Image (tube, rainbow, N blue to C red; front, side):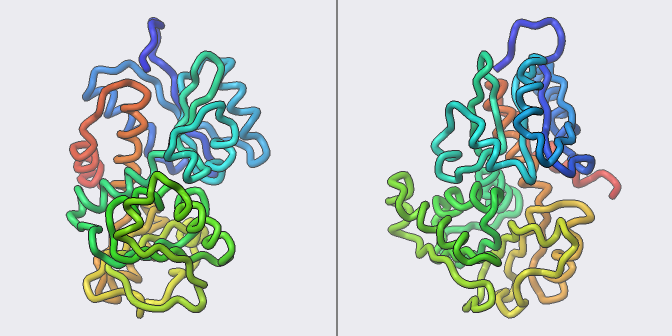
Length: 286
């Protein structure tokens, strides 16, 4: 929440890599549109230095931070308190600093579902959905995807045991009990995946590493939404693959804006106009 300091409240996004992040631009625009005084910066974090970086930010008086790859699991573990969403994912992308203590939340899944349903205009209710990956991004997305009411939701990962563990944790959680009466939730081996899907969400690191699409095109229903959580050049390969096979491609820029709006509202107590900011970003030259 806003403080009484006379200088803008400092916030950061931590990751490695981080130079590509549009989060500072997004939050600066949110602040401008809502009249909030914040200073939001990128912070490249050493792969073995997340805890030290977090401690330094708190000592320096930061108010909170976003967390991106590969630190979302560490962010969850660093918190003294966690939201129900973060507890279910066991990963966090949004931290609030409260008198030296850390509160963790996960806004990734809400951002994803809001972008798919509100901005892309694709309802998830009654659909067949494939989630690729079982890392921090997928963990944050799974509960909101379940809550959206798909008919079938399949999680695949290169290491099947991780997908199975993620699914088992969500099946066992009372928070999702009612939603799971409508949704068949299961994990499958990536190499033995069966069926085709209305929506495929790539939450794996394949695009970030420049690798090929992690599933075969036969799993795309005609006109399916193929959604990559990456955005910008990293998503171009996946989107070209989707387009070549008759799917509707979408990158993760809208998810980035929508999850940022959820984090901003948590920090500042005011909800920014996410759809407007997304339109502005889409209109900018590549």
